[in-house]
Length: 333
Ligand SMILES: NC(=O)c1ccc[n+]([C@@H]2O[C@H](COP(=O)([O-])OP(=O)(O)OC[C@H]3O[C@@H](n4cnc5c(N)ncnc54)[C@H](OP(=O)(O)O)[C@@H]3O)[C@@H](O)[C@H]2O)c1
Image (tube, rainbow, N blue to C red; front, side, top):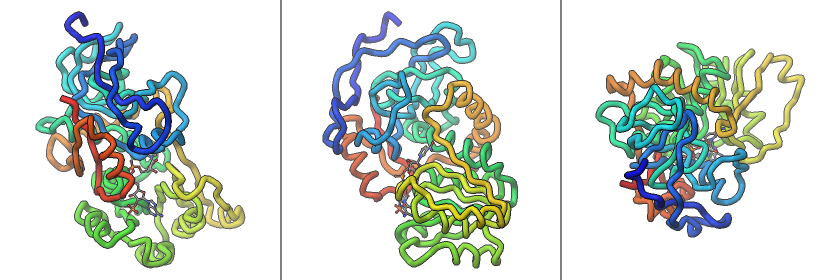
């Protein structure tokens, strides 16, 4: 630890606001606690929850750093007490509860995954948040099985492109919705089975048509509001609905008779407040089931654009404009 500086660059907004609050400030280099590692951050992923946090709309779990950023990639420079599975110098990417937009960040050792061979740090930094989320919701909650069909909104979002890869890894059919024809093309090029432009009318009857009238097995929803009844109408009998966000409203109207007749399952989850042990279990499953697909080239990162830390405001503006396909990263080295 002695060779490390005492302070570092970080983005730690003093108050909520627009992208202009994302200015670089000086902060103390954090110390790894028991079971944690200290990472020299080479790149940090940018996610929609960061936008919500910047705007003051995302309740942070108690004790999470106020420095922004939920995922990083870099090299380990120090080990906390009791860490035996990782070494100083290891290149890792990690899911963290905050603190990623900075030169150094601490991460629980169990939430670190190796940087896949040949992958750049700015690419690897974009993997944890969406892969942990997609795995927790599609594998663990929805119990997605080989050969099933799912509907995923936001087909070119960070979550959407990861869900497409998840579907490919499991030989599933995936129907996505996107806001433009160009995004529909992009989603199909990435492997979506079908892509529907949600501005061209209600997606629900089209989903039924595409599934021969049966409906999909799973809906992964990030829209909420008026999409909820249409999502349920898109499900087969016994289908599973998983909510991960509610961009169009968190109050959902449910016809319980419809739910009963179709024997539907309605669930959802939020990654950030989950325990280190739960996140560690997800990391273990990802390393076993998904990381080998990066190693053998069947999957890749979907980095759309990187910005230096000083241009985090531009990175947020890009995300808010919806001009991206896949993921955005900040570079620090
Ligand atoms: N629960 C969790 O643990 C968790 C974790 C991570 C992320 N999330 C949530 O997952 C969502 C995606 O995150 P991200 O980082 O991947 O963000 P992102 O890349 O900015 O994507 C946001 C997406 O929302 C889509 N969208 C907005 N309104 C829509 C509508 N009416 N119909 C269909 N799609 C619509 C956009 O599609 P178009 O651009 O095509 O309009 C865009 O693809 C966010 O809402 C985020 O808060 C949840």
